[in-house]
Length: 59
Ligand SMILES: [Zn+2]
Image 1 (cartoon, rainbow, N blue to C red):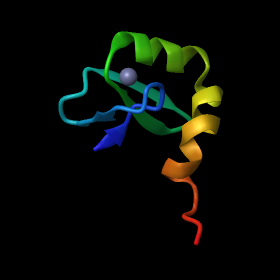
Image 2 (image 1 turned 135 degrees about the vertical axis):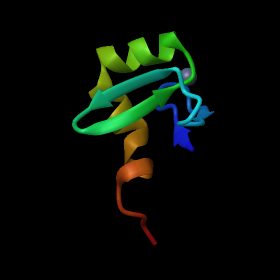
Image 3 (image 1 turned 90 degrees about the horizontal axis):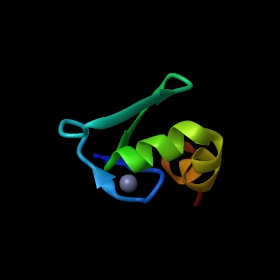
């Protein structure tokens, strides 16, 4: 499962219809609105939610 970074919804990669590629990574979205929002400001969403998803786990 993947996380829609824009709204936080869990998305099934196999069924996701809205997909973006950024910095060699693939991101899945629940709706065209979420995909567009990410495409416009990917850095913003990666900063807000990406750390918990891709960063090292603390503790
Ligand atoms: Zn969404």
